[in-house]
Length: 376
Image (spheres, rainbow, N blue to C red):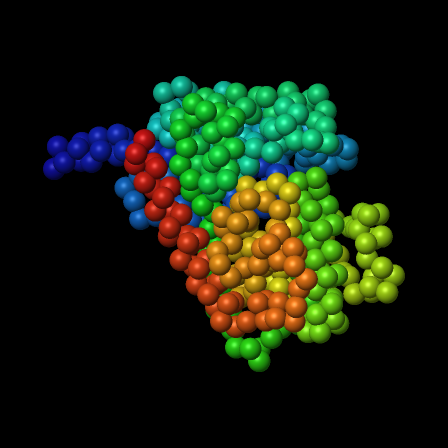
């Protein structure tokens, strides 16, 4: 009996121990959701691996609530407080693998012992590319260049990068040719959503949905232009536009004529449930963007039974499947009334939903990540 207990303790002490590190609370809405969903998904794995989860807490932002730049307070939380804590946690837990869920936290490589395997999920490298002057008309201030350089060094010292799309993997290989990669697509937990109704007669409210800020990486101006083009179709001539993001820019206000202003609504800082309601009731989603590493609004639209009109980023074509609409292809020809059927078709909406469930499920994601852990 005594020998068996010793053997069990020895097996537990030698088991592979993985520490998953999420994003700081001020990292943005999408990264907070990514951290939350990853923690929940990886905790669901039935495995003999020993999994631990941690993320930086908001400390300085609570002490200095009136400080003008929350970004610098987050840096203090992440690297002055959490960095040393991470070093201690890895030692105390005897961690074998550290998995960082956002490439902007690759700086943690400096706080993790060298014999500990270091994995980084890479969403995109556009901030690094901009800091290196690789993106025209985007200027990064000197502190930002230093910060992105430190991220680059940390990422280059990783043992493995997990790009969330083949498009992102291509960027990783260009910037870090010696870094091993394995594509691990993002996912949507369809268990959190009610099965959408696909019947033609259950057509929802008459509005299109855009989910993005006005940012150099995005193309919200063109997205609004797509909606204005859709107004030419009989079925959509009375449709409205709902934008989830920051307030309209001057260029966007000019694009929206006075006669249409009353039909455009902008919402900021909505809760997940409110966003879900807008997804489920919209006619379709419009998502035109210049630089993306994935295409989450596309698969979120599909999981709610909606078609997405996408364009710009190459990553979108990788994610979208056959039933969503590539605006870069359709805009070369005048749209006809048949175009509206492509958006509202119950058959196409059902195919899109099934495509997402098959290709971007929690199970497929966790199986892929679990295999990575075992391989290391």
